[in-house]
Amino acid sequence: SLCIVSGSTRVIMAPGLSARAARLVALPKPSFTSIYYASLDKLYDPVSRPAGIVNLGVAENRLSAPLVKDRLDSANSGVSFDSLAYNPYTGSERLRVAMARVASRHIARCSIDHKRLILTSGAGSSLWILAASLAEPGQGILVPTPYYYAYDRDFGALTDCQVVPFNTNDRGDPLNPEALSTAVHSASSSGIKCRLLVVTNPSNPTGEVVPACKLQATIDWAGRNGIDVIVNELYACSARSSTFQSVLSMYSDPSGVCNLPPHVHFVWGLSKDFAVNGLRVGCLYSGSDLLTEAASKFAYFVQIGGTVQAQLSECLEDDDWVDDFLAE
Image 1 (tube, rainbow, N blue to C red):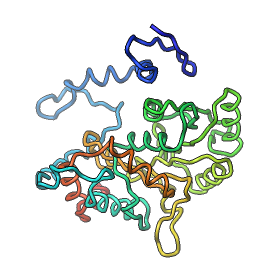
Image 2 (cartoon, rainbow, N blue to C red):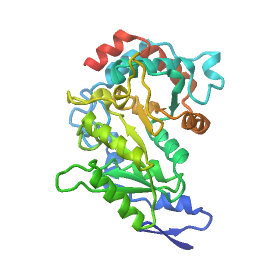
Image 3 (tube, rainbow, N blue to C red):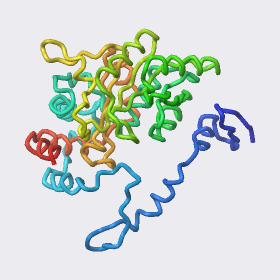
Image 4 (cartoon, rainbow, N blue to C red):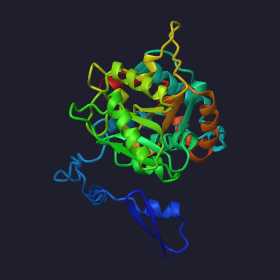
C-alpha cells in the first residue's frame, strides 16, 4: 500500500486504486448518513407506519412530493421512439425550453436563453462540470462556512481541486472583500491558488439569503481578482425571504434579457424546489461562451434519461400547475 497526503488528510492507497479514487474513499463520511440509510425502512406513513420516523436531517421535500407524484401520474409515460433514442448531451430541446421558462418566470424575472442552458443529472453534476472546466488540479475553490458537506465530493472527487473553507469574521460576513482577500492570501501561503468562489443562495445549511448588493460587490471583487463565481441557487423557489434576488435578475438588460458576466455561472435544479431528488435533474447557465461550449461536451457524462425528460417537460409546460405548486 502507498500512503499519500492530500491537504490535511492522510490517505492509504489500496492496491489497484488510483490516487483519485483513494482520496474519494478517504473523504470523511458524516455520521448522519448511516442513520439516514438505516431509517429508510422505518419512515413515517400515515397508514402503514403511523409511529414511524419523521426525518428532518435530509433536504427532501416530502410534504410536497404527493403533489408532484399526482402530476407525474397524470402525465404520459414519457416513452416514445425519440425518448428511447440518444438525446442531445445538453438535454432535450423540449426540457431546456420548459426549464428556462420556469427559471425565467419564477427565478430570474427576466428572459434566459434556453440554448445556453446545460442540463445535467443533478446540481452536483453541474458543480463538477464547472470545477472541471475552470480550475486545474490542485487549485482552490473558496467556500464560506458552514457549507453543504457534499461540496467536498462535488468539487474535488473527479477534478483533484481543493475546497478551501473560510470562516466568517467577527461581523459574521464571509463575503466582505477583506474576508475574501484574507482567505485567498491564506490559501496562497499554503501553495493553493484560488480559482473559484461558490456562493450558495439561499444558504444550505443556514437558509440565509445573500442580499443583491452584497452579491454584486462579491462578484465585482472576484472579477478584479481573476476568480470565477458559481452562484448555486438550488433553493431559489423555496426562499421565504423577500430580500432574495437571483443573480440572473441582477443582470437583466433593458430589453429584459439576462446577460451574465463571463465569470459568473448559475446553478439550479428540480430536486428541492420541485421535490424530485431521485429524478436527478440539474442545470447550469453561464455568461461565458467558452464555458458553455466546454460544459456541453462534459455533459456527455451526466445526461438525464430520455423518458424522465419527456415526463418532466409535460409537467413544467403546464404554467398553471407550476404556479399553483410553487405557491403551495
